[in-house]
Image (tube, rainbow, N blue to C red; front, side, top):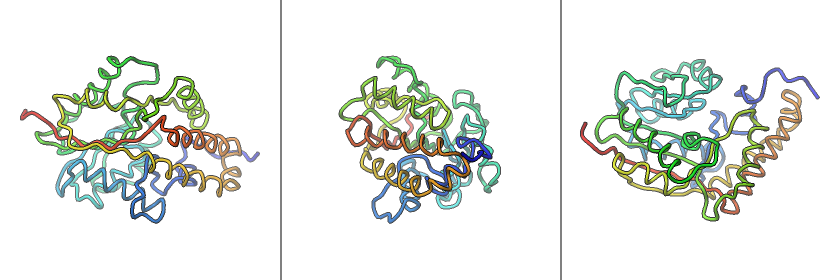
Length: 283
């Protein structure tokens, strides 16, 4: 096995080898999209639409990852500024390296964020899964954890602000503990990072009650399956290049994880949801 020149989970080039160029590690939207790049671009457009982003706005991205959404907001969404928060240093460094005009980032957990201004809109992709933590929780504990997120987002925003969320949720079949633990173990093997816990969609709605008015909710389980298929195909096709740089074990761990994820979405144990909210209250 070749010696890796960096660890995969900290190397954006590894993720670009099998995901898209940004990279966006979440559900693409495939309607009218010919390939993965276009499908991920369509998803970013949709999230901005759901959040009510308009030219001249200041937008917050909670869990901004490598900053693909941030770049989209200022380059294509007309936002005056796009500020991200994310706890992962290697992702924040990639955003700072690109230095996109109008984009800024704080490298910290969302609960530690203390903004000096209020935002016109908030977007959040694949962050609520980590709000609830990795431990098994009851409904009350999950709603409490989720409500903390919605309360903070309320405090960070101006009246009538929009909020768009993409989140992996418990699917129509339900997620048993054994499958959930297997997925957590395989994700940690593939990324050397702790995993989140998909919340139940009704608990998300309950947590937002009184703070954010629900405008729309739509699930995209089949879009997630197609996204996973695209990643699997790209990773398989790049096996030789990936193995030469990062090692065959890294490649195989990713392949195994993507296959398990596909199974859980195909069978309905997991789904993905897009939710749009409007902030309530005049304060």
